[in-house]
Length: 177
Image 1 (spheres, one colour):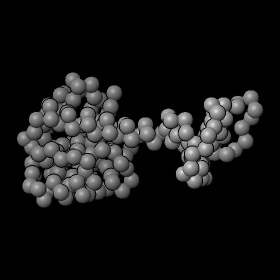
Image 2 (cartoon, rainbow, N blue to C red):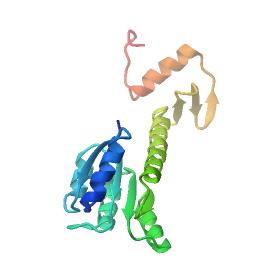
Image 3 (cartoon, rainbow, N blue to C red):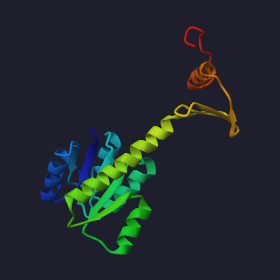
Image 4 (tube, rainbow, N blue to C red):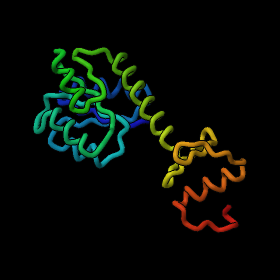
């Protein structure tokens, strides 16, 4: 179950959106102030942030900029400002998507699912490639490249090399192999 943080000061919007997303099988938390938002984002494991622009304490633009310094967590802006310039600014400072108020919860849910699908696929792709010096091992394709050139391996040779690379080139006991 993906965990989402809604940072929104309008209690009606945040509560109704929380209920809608929970009914769509998300684990949802709400933060109504910008003052503690960055600390909360960085201290918990969230898969996505829904962020309002006008917040008490610290505005959404500042929060987005601060989070982007240390995290790639997806951020969906949810705000009443809807000019083209506003959207471009938000996307350029690091937002992954932009939804204007009033909004359709169904559309927002579709955007959230799209972003999470892309994020999880990127993480999955990243986890299928091992690198050690000038050697790359694609676990999914069972492929070994050295300096970008494919090197043929038997299945057993591939598994042995994969284990050695997983151990960062450190000694691997025979029993382990």
